[in-house]
Length: 96
Image (tube, rainbow, N blue to C red; front, side, top):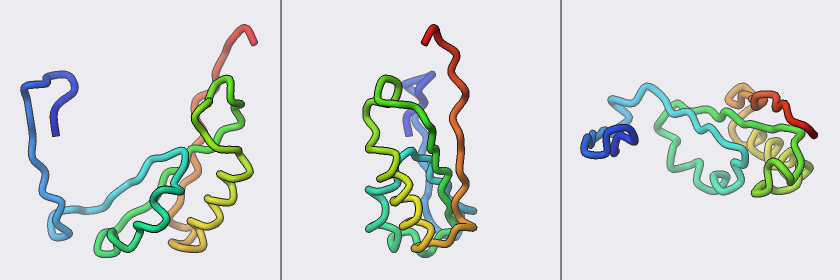
């Protein structure tokens, strides 16, 4: 992994279950991960899922909110709701 502040500094991390305490996936759309969850079955993991009320003018790259909520439900059915933390992004202050 290259350090973004010091690009010449590169660290290597061993992603072996014997040395990894857990994995946190922090995302606004976990859909691409749903069919890959089995790859992490030997690790403790959970998701921090950011779901905000912002429109396309602020979050233009996201799918429709209803679709994201359905994905959240599917993820909860797959891994359990106790392994999902809903995260609300900071409140934005603007002229709008």
